[in-house]
Length: 224
Image 1: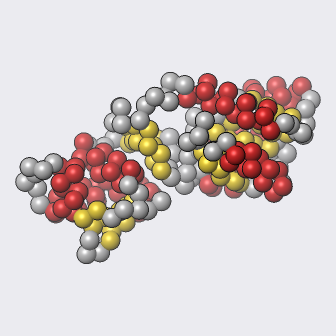
Image 2: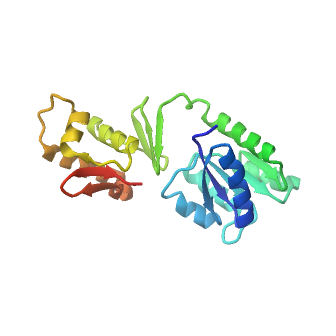
Image 3: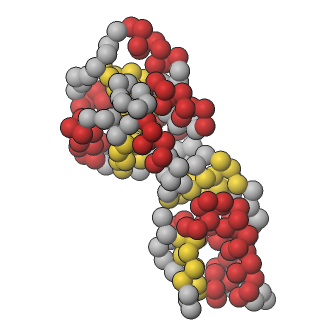
């Protein structure tokens, strides 16, 4: 099930390295966090599709992290723990965990559990054309853009601009190119119109507006 980004949250570097190896062999994109606080900081910049969370961690344990994540995001979560007693499993599932795996585990079991959770969570959206870059998710079917799970209210032209930038992150577009692509070949707008729309789009993106960079003398690009 390639194309998904999975975050591993574990204070043990060897465990993170081991799980990363299993996941990358199945062509998942992998992000690592050393504890719950670190994970929440990373999630301000990117939106993983699934979290694998160790229960026993310093600073913020896995259960506390799960409760915080579920309060703000609709992201599935699998607990990974050396503690296999019934209370921990039940408590983990009650606070929003989608599965609970006890260490040690077989690589095939971990992958099977991950695939099962991903199917249950995303089975209704897998056929949609979704573009995911950094904190942005662009749904072409519904013309909806979310930033870290929060939907934005964009005009047709603002949506067109952001979709183009997300689809071609890192590529610089001149104002004339943006007019041609987003406004259409028969546009009668000036390049100043592009600047105005970019300014409004940046404002709507809030703290992420700075990701749309001005390339002086040329145009604009999205750099994530």
